[in-house]
Length: 457
Figure 1 (cartoon, one colour):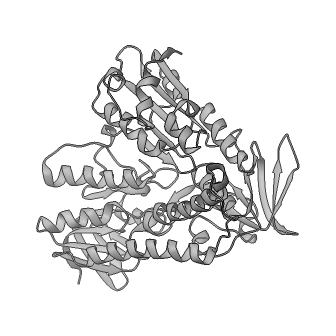
Figure 2: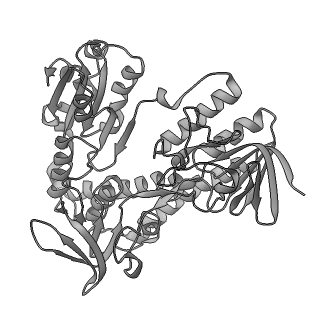
């Protein structure tokens, strides 16, 4: 006999537990299903563990550069077992906290196992059949590897499996020159690995403007990370040192040999084994669940939140999905996915903070635009910290005077971008930010200067 609930939530990534808490607090009975570790990608293999590793790598780099600040220190020795143990502790505590909160819900019941639809309102978890009028999918995604020829027969890591590494690979080859690949590239270079990044496209992080891609490449190559772009027809195989990557490119050797391999070529949603066809839930060609502006699927009473809906691939977009659903269901507040402004960060060092449109996208939109850009070498705080790589760029609509987008590549860029983002959400003219008095010496104080130097493009 099916067990009845008001709501079923499948997955405990960023959206699921918060939604479960809201529904439970509203007096609704909630079944939460989790097949693996509580907390989803961010907590276990994404943001929290990777940024913990980034922090350890930054500490090693600080010691390595100590003499530039007049501090005498021996070259750092990285204890990767200790680095991993710290990462595991922080990630583990976060996962345990999520599990404790979900299991402690007043009106909640937790089921551990894999969920599959039996019908639009029935879900099977092992021997249990659960039924509810409202079902929420929060199942996340996973790394793609099958698109690379030879991957099945070649030892390799993904962003998930590399979390188990407790040593410094002598030469790490990374296939994929986007956000995940570049963060691991700099991280392991600072731990002591030789690193080669192989990217099929003509440049790194292709969704960014060309000047951003070029500057990020310069930052990585400054740390002696080898970058191979326009590497077509990638195939991997076992090699004399461990792994070999074959590329067809215009420059340099068609072979890249290394000891270890990380594949960071994209992700796919975990929707292929949920029995969505039995529920009638539509997905697109890549497997992402089709949703409307309020994250409702093609079936009444079923929603999709987080990475599996293709409307954002970040922790913050997943959490915002929860806020949108909760507002519409519980608060009588109409909120939509289109209300939000694209914003994210690339956590190389220095980081890239991004909000809104790129300059290229703004130009393609047909708008008359103004662009302000200044190098971080002009920013006192960056000079004082000895971190002058990168630049600040803000794109403005020449007619409405509203900010269309910004890229801040430099020290504190992941935090400073929010000053721009908040003005964008307020739909205020750029002059509000231009005329603001900021504190000296900070990175943010230079935003008014950038906006005071707008030029037509």
